[in-house]
Structure formats: C-alpha cells, structure tokens
Length: 137
Image 1: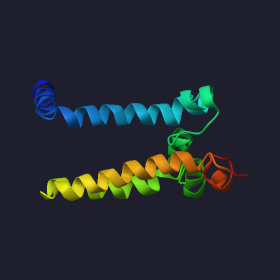
Image 2 (image 1 turned 135 degrees about the horizontal axis):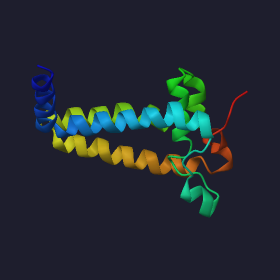
Image 3 (image 1 turned 90 degrees about the vertical axis):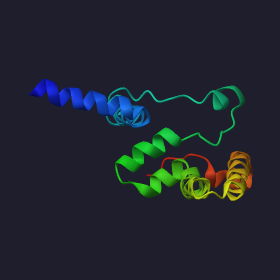
Image 4 (image 1 turned 120 degrees about the vertical axis):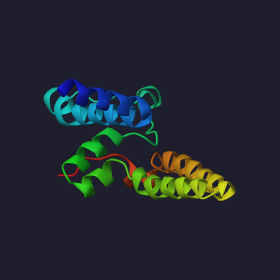
C-alpha cells in the first residue's frame, strides 16, 4: 500500500515539475536562512560591493529575508526596501499578463526595471544613504 501511495506522489511530481522545483528551492532557502546562517554567520557576499564598494539593488536581501522569518519587518526594510516595491509590482505584471493585457504587463515590467536601477543609484548617494543596508540596535 505504501508503494502505491509513493507511486502517486512521484506521478504527481512528474506532472508538475515547476511546483516541485519551487518547493525544493524554497526548502533549501529555508534551510540556508534558518540553519546555515545562524550556525556559521557566513552569508552570500556581493561581488559588486566587493569590487566597487557600492551597494547593488540586492545588497542586504539575504539579511532582509532572515529578518522576515523572525517577523522583524522594520529591520528587514532597513536591510533592503526593494521587496516593498517588487512584490506588488510583480503581482501586477503577473495579473496583466494572465488577463491578456500584455502591453500593460510590459509597462509595469519597464517601471520595475527603472525603479530597481534608481534604487541602486540612490542608495549610494549621500542623500539616499538611508537606503543602504544597516543594522538597527
């Protein structure tokens, strides 16, 4: 009986490869954030920051995700505020593309790319220093 049930699970996973990959990658990300980081304190280094000394739009994203898992929303925002714009923007893009309004979806995607580029530039300027990833006490 257990073999039959396992066979059904395998058949379902083969019919939905995207769901399987998203689940596996999500579990690996949780393992990384909840086990690896607290034990080793070895994060993902940013090559742009290492080479240029400038923050890229993704700098602080790993620490922001770890803060979100601890429900520390404010600290997560201080590490990287970009998801606040990307999550609703990508949701709009997805909705427009699924509903048949591809031109609106492309416009939303263009706005998102411009926002990411501007965010990357602003967080490295003196008046945008509040966008740089910081740890609050």
